Image (cartoon, rainbow, N blue to C red; front, side):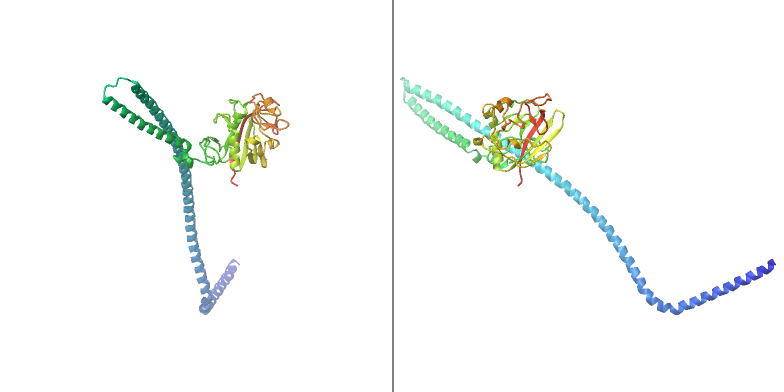
Length: 392
C-alpha cells in the first residue's frame, strides 16, 4: 500500500515539472518575440529615470553648497557685528578723547589769560617804580653833568615804550575776554546733549545756554537723559531762597537742583520729555513720565508751561501743578513754601507732590517731606528728575 502511494506521488511531481518547463519555454519565446517592441517603449522611461537621478544628485550637491554658503554668511555676519561693536567703542573713545582735549584746551586758554593778566600787572608795577625814580631824579637838584641828563632821557624813552607795550597787552586781554570764541572755538568740540553718554558729569554747550556741566544718566532707560534734580540722602538743604533756586545748587554727585533758569533755557530751545524715578523706604520703585515738559521764563515765575501726556505706575501727581508759578520761602503768596520749607510749584492746596520737600526718614503719613501722593502719603527715600530732548 505504501509502495502504491509512492508511485502515484512520483508521477504527479514529474508531470508538474514538465508543465513548469513548458510554461517557462513558452514565456521565453514570448519575451523574444516582443523584445524589440517592448524596449522601444521602456527606453524613454529608463532615460527619464536616469535623468531624474542625475538631477537629484546635482540638487544634493547644490544643497550642500548652499548650506556651506549659509554657514559662511553667518560667520561673516557675526564678524561684521563684532567689527561694528569695535567701531562704536572706538567712536565712543574718540568722543571722550575730543571732550577731554577740549576741556584741556579750555583750561590752557584760561591759564594763558591769567598769565597775561599777571604779566600786565607786573609790567605796570615796574613802570610805576620807574616813574617814581624819574620823578625823584627830576626833583633832585644835584645834576652833575650832561651824562645824567642823557640817562634820564633814555629812561623816559624806555618808559614810553613800556607804556605802549602795557597798553597793547591790556588791549589783547580785553579782546580775549570780550571774544573768547574767536581765539579758541571750544564750543565746536562740545556735545549739545547727553545722547550716547555714560553716567558721569560732562561739559556741554546747548543752544541759548553758556557752557555748563550736567549729570548724564542712561541707567533708567536709553541714553540721552539729563538729571535736573536728585534727592538721595538729605545732604543738601532745599529750604532755599529764590536766587538759589534760580541759579541752581548742590553737589552733582549727590543731592542737587540744576536751576530754574537752566530748565527754562533748555526746554525753550527744543521740546523735552520728563522722567521721574522714585523709591520709598520699603525699597519699592515707581515712575512718572510726561511727554512734553516746558518751563516758562522768570517773568512768568518759571511756571510749568506744559507737561504733555502722562504715563507710568506712580499716578499723575504733577498735572495739578501745571500753569503754577514757582515759589520759595522768601517769595511766596500763599505761605506754602514757608510751611513746607522748600521751593516748588505749589498749587491752591499747596501740593499733590513735592519733590523738593524736607528729607525725612520716618516712614509716616503726612510728614511734610518728599511726597508723591498719587502713590502714597509716606516720604520718599530717593527721587531723580530727568529731561531728554525729543527727536520729533
